[in-house]
Each structure stands twice: as structure tokens, then as C-alpha cells.
Image (cartoon, rainbow, N blue to C red; front, side, top):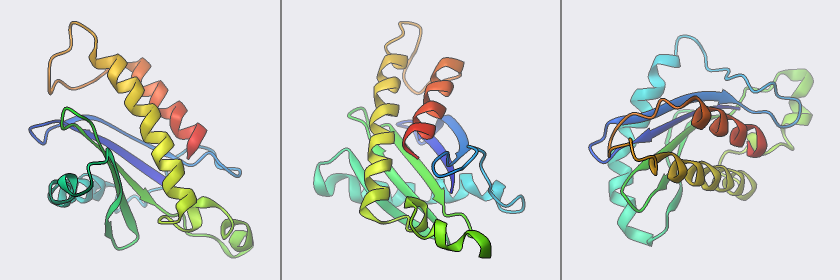
Length: 163
């Protein structure tokens, strides 16, 4: 499965972006987005912001689960108390004929299964903890892009750990 994480500020501006692949069940952690569709990741995530604004006031939860889908792309959302949105675009990998039986038992086989939702929730929780530590820097101001290599490494580590 391939993932694209975008952290969106209060003015709908991107604060952080990264892409990575699954590291579970023999994955190498490299995103496998089709090259002709890679440029669409930002557009898919941006189009789901309207749905986030509709859903965010409904349940009172920070983790909004899978809120949108576009063809075979799914978008999950996590809202912070400061109205910062963590959006995760996840695209299930297309199993080859030789690995079809192995892929059917993985969490990547069904992006909306409870196991996948729980893994994404744990990923978001760890990213949120690292986010709070990053923005507590006295030199950080609201809606400023995060360029910290330490934060990027911790996000990638959380992706490897949970996804």
C-alpha cells in the first residue's frame, strides 16, 4: 500500500507533505504510486477538505476515520484541537497473481477494515504527539511550514511501525 500524508493548516495551506509505502509483510517502505497519477495526490487530498469541514463537527472526535474515496484512493483524517488537519491518502497495492493469497490477509487488502482503521489511528496518534513537540518550538509560528528532518524521520518511523 502507498501512503501520502499531508498536514494542512488553518488557512488550508500545506504545512508538511511526505509519501511512503507499507513496511508490513515484506514491504520495503517505498511508495508505489503510478507515475502518471502521482501528481493527483495533492488534488485528491485538497478535494477532501470540504468533506472534512462537514464531518468535523458531527462526532466530536479527533480521528474522523476514512472520510472520502476517489476511485481506488482513500482519505483518512485526524483533526487537532487547533484545527490542523492530518490527511492520509492510502492506495491499496494491486496484488500480483503470485501474491494474491498473501495480500488478501494483510490490512492493506481492505482499506476500510477495522484493522486498517486502528493502524491508521495509531499512526495518527504518534504523528500528533510528534507534531505537538515540533510546534512547541519557540521559533515556530502558526501556519508555518515544517521542514524539520527530525519530524520527517519520526513520521516515516511511525509509518514503518504501524502501516
